[in-house]
Image: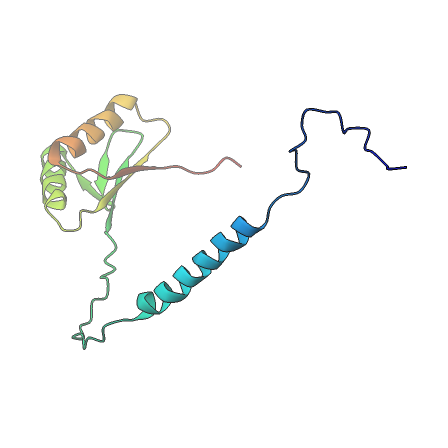
Length: 139
């Protein structure tokens, strides 16, 4: 008695359960050959005798200017008392320096905001672009 499959009457007689590996192997062999041919060409380099020069980056740190506004409204430029005209002159001179110095603004906690705003306005009008506020951390 011949053994017949219970699925013999199905309409999918051509259904395959296995993947055909032959095309995959063919593609892999072609890729292997392509890479074997191209890799030596990629590694081929032209030898050139280049000139030698020192091109080290110059590390010039900008100086800093300390401007302090005391509680009575007195303005100090690097711990020297200045009036409004002298402050504007010093700001203009500092703005022309290369690299431009950083302005560190120290203001007493009791100084009116208007005095601090005037110093900031003078710095901006004079051309200084880098400004920082100096504070003390809370204890």
